[in-house]
Amino acid sequence: MEVNLGVSLKLLKNIITIDGPGGVGKGTLAFSLAKKLGWEVLDSGLIYRLIGFIAAEKNLASSKEIIETLEKSSIKLITNIDSYSCEINFNNKILGEELRNEKIAVKASEISKDANIRSAIIKIQRNAYLEDRGLIADGRDMGTVIFPEAALKIFLEASPEIRAERRANQLKEKGMNVIMHDLLLAIKKRDEKDMNRNVSPLRPAKEAIIIDTSKMCISEVEEKVMEIYKKL
Image (cartoon, rainbow, N blue to C red):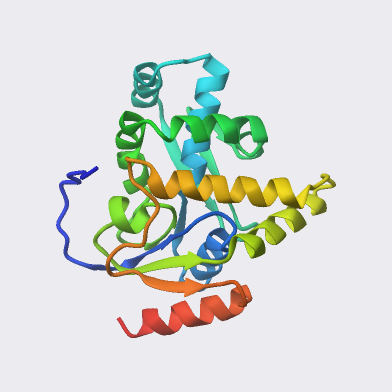
């Protein structure tokens, strides 16, 4: 899907996009870079979770109802650098943990397939960019659709097995039981859906620098990205 963003494609050095599938370290890298550069973070997945939250809370079934609710609402993204997390001020209510449960994640995944929904939130995502601060945009279509004018586009990847192991460790830390076979299968299934969907499929931007994080720690990835950034 081609989206006319109505912006100049003059490359902007204070936007770094980080795309890739889940479990490659996008979020951690985004916050570590933002902390170093003094920039904001766009956690695009959290916006989809907000939409899932709205649909569930208000029992909305159609994309038209969801979009109308978005248009009438006040939405502001909040970056919490020290805690490596984002929140959303939705109609003067701060939402954070409410958006991070499995029920909302499933709802968000269903909704994100809708082309009208994805188009409706482009403006919300682009509003996260402040010219005087800079932005690290974390997602799956940040470099291809949302910020094509970013001077630096990073695409992270890692093997499904490594990503399943990382996710399993996160869940175990929360006291949850993990079945590795099921987790690995779910990751592969999500990858297939993301890469083959008609709307904003998961793929590197043409100019993206691809980094395999399978055998790298976050500090190594950060160092590599900063070396590239300093050469812009």
